[in-house]
Length: 120
Image (cartoon, rainbow, N blue to C red; front, side):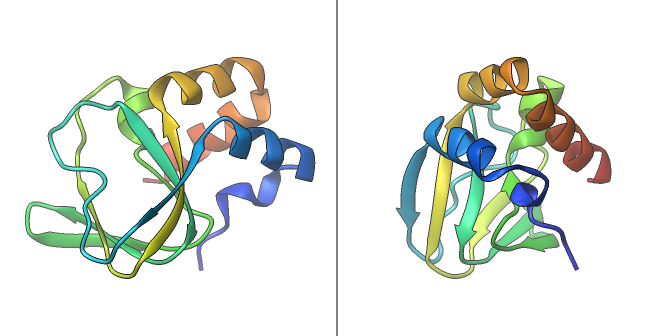
């Protein structure tokens, strides 16, 4: 159903994006992003599933290849939803600064990020 965020990148671009972040593992039930908090990070999901929730209502689920937390960074706004791990997660953690630097240095990253933001 959903297309991997990484699908449109060359292997070299995937390596560059991955190197811009830090690989992290989070347990089931953990909430790496909370609604109405500052946009200081984004994650690319490598393994696992998450629930995207606005209030107590689930509005989406995301899986491997999806990016999350990007909308508030691009829009310079507070978070509009919370993310809750439905399974253990393997992620690439990107600071807001890393996302902005990748957008400046890689037009393909900026285009892919904007496409995700518009689709949500």
